[in-house]
Image 1 (cartoon, rainbow, N blue to C red):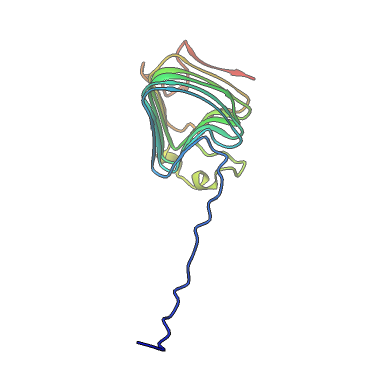
Image 2: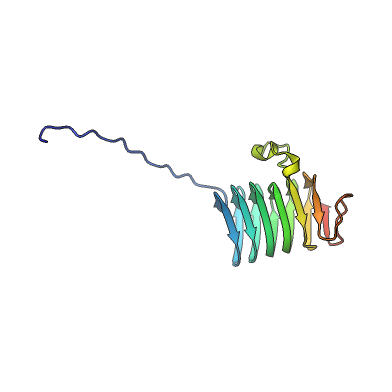
Length: 175
């Protein structure tokens, strides 16, 4: 109608922020092939849920975690070299089924506990009963200062788990 004022709806703009992460997903990061050479300020690979790697060649240098999944990390293939990181791999459940993995970390190489440094407060509140590390692949090299952190349940494919001994080719060396 003439002379009628149409109310204006306020407009909102979504502000984009840059991320210092390499590959980032809200639900799932899945890598099946390809070559990735990442050098990031934060996590190189990050998912708010899970990370699955079934193939490919990954060369990672990260300012924080090399590979981080809030819920789970599964490796079933590929060649993963984490050249530099604060924590190499971090999640509540980590399963290393296949693939060749080398981790270099200034703190924990493989962490299922979240740590006490406050870097992942969401993981610190998790009951240790819900944490699991399962290594079925014997070629896993971890060079780190912090060690293998948060291990309440720790399984290898050869059945050794109660005394914490590691298989012959899966070892830790201080950096």
